[in-house]
Length: 351
Image (cartoon, rainbow, N blue to C red; front, side, top):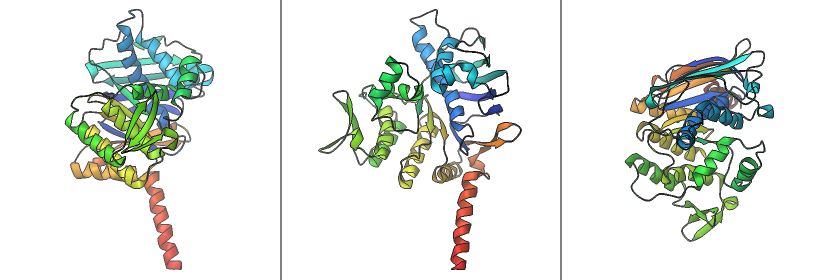
C-alpha cells in the first residue's frame, strides 16, 4: 500500500507532495484538474510492480523499469506512445518518488521530454518484492458490452483507444468465481452488493457475460448500466481478485447510479477500506459521495483522506489535503450545492 507520493512535471502538475496516504483516499477537483492522471500514475506504479513480480520469476532479464515504462505508455497513451509527451509543457523532465508499505519499498524514477520508450533514471537498481501486490482499476466507462472488442484492439492489434486500465479489468473479470469462504467483511460486502443487484448475478456462459436473476437471463446489452457497475465489484470479490491487501482505484463510481445506490456503494467502499484491509483511491464529482464519506468518517472516527485539486494560473494544478474526520472543507462540489440551494430559497421568496 502507498504511504506517500511526490511528483514534478507530470501532465498538468508542476509539483505535488502527498505525504500521508490513508486506507481510503478521495480525490476531487473540477474537470481537467488531473484527478484521473493521479489515479493512473499510482495504478501504473502498483500494477507494474505486480506484473514484474509475476513475470520476473520466469524471466530473470526482465526489469521493473521496463515493465513500468510499458505500463505508463499504455495507461496514459500519450501521442505516439512516447513517455516524454507526459512531461509538463515547458519543462524538461518529469520525476516521481513514492513509498509502499509492501517490504518498505522506496521508489523513484524520472525521464525527459525527449524520452520515447525507456526509463533510464530510477532507484533502486533492483526491486526486491516478497509481499504480493495486487492492484485493480475501475474506470468510469461501461466495459462489459465491449470486452471482446477491447481485447482485440489492444492485445492483438495494439491500437490506441481503450487504455490498459480497461484491458487489465477485463482479464480480472474473466477469472472464474472461486469456491470457499470469503473474509468476513468481504462476505458482508458481497451480501450488500447482491442486495443492490436484486439478488441477481453476473456469470459467464459460453464465454459471454450474462445477468441472471431467478429464471430471467439477460445479455450485457440488455442489462442496466448500474447493475453492470455494481456487478463488476461483486465479481471481483467473488473471484478473489479483490482481497485484503489489494489497492483499488475507482474513477467516478457515481456514473449511471441512482443516489440511493450511490450511498449504498459508498458504504461498501468504506467497509472494504476500514474493515477488509483494502486501500482505496477514489475520484469523484458527486455531492452524495463526498457527503456520505464525510458522515462515515465523523460517525466512526475514521480517517478518510481528501486530496482537493484546483488550477493555479502560475503553478498548474495545485493540491490541498484534508481529513474528512475533521469535517468538510470548502470545495467546489459543496459550494455549488449551497449556491443552488440559496437560489431556490430566493426564488421561493420572490414567488
